[in-house]
Image (cartoon, rainbow, N blue to C red; front, top):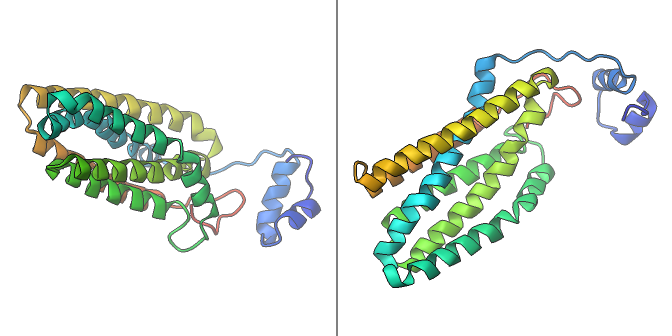
Length: 239
């Protein structure tokens, strides 16, 4: 990239305006480009999106799904049912690059490229958790789990673009550290909730509704929080 000049940059992307090309020239010349810092609270809010993902995944896979399958199929068939659940989750996870590529190819609009995937994924996650909560047959439960896996893989690749696209270069180490913090925090909360569910302090259905609430929070945070910052190359194009 540093070997490009303004002329070659213009031939590479003809829709950039003069101000954008001037900033690109600073990058290709090796000049120092200072991006405005973002408030730490903004970064914390953005990265907090990942805590519900870890809470939901840990609580579903570790506690709620085995308990629900035990009620639906019984002890004898629980292992086979869990095996199919695991295979489905793995297969859908392998499709993550397809969802991420689809968000790259999404036409630019007032809502951006990433927000539709985050919103769709989290809302479908809330619906799927509701289905799993009240499913009385393995077929319906499997449909709910499939919808959850698809929604999760729809939202996470798109939201992962947040750090490189919206966090200034000089704050990405801080943002990465906050990201890891919320991963660990989510895992700890998931373990605590799992303990309470296992002890019967929190009913299974109540735990499912907690996860539905977290999915709705993630949908809201993903759409409201993914605001555009002053961009380096294409500030007119929201994420």
